[in-house]
Length: 89
Image (cartoon, rainbow, N blue to C red):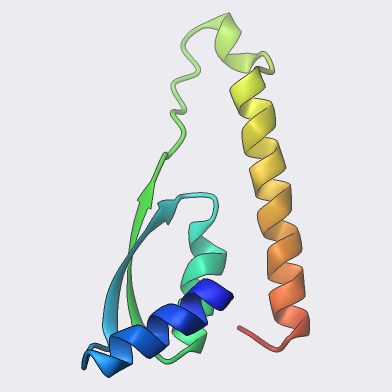
């Protein structure tokens, strides 16, 4: 939230109203929501998209990176709930 608010102030001071938002794919929906709430036009550029090959049996087993992604997803879900409580849509 603070990043969006502070960035928007700097961008507006520079005469800009459109931003290319680069962040993780998991974080993108909430980050874009926060930046849009400041009145900026957001072009989303997510990174770190997960592969969904499913070609090998090992693709279906939990892994340390998958657990980290689960943590990130839950963190973002909680962040969205907090933003919604503040009235940010």
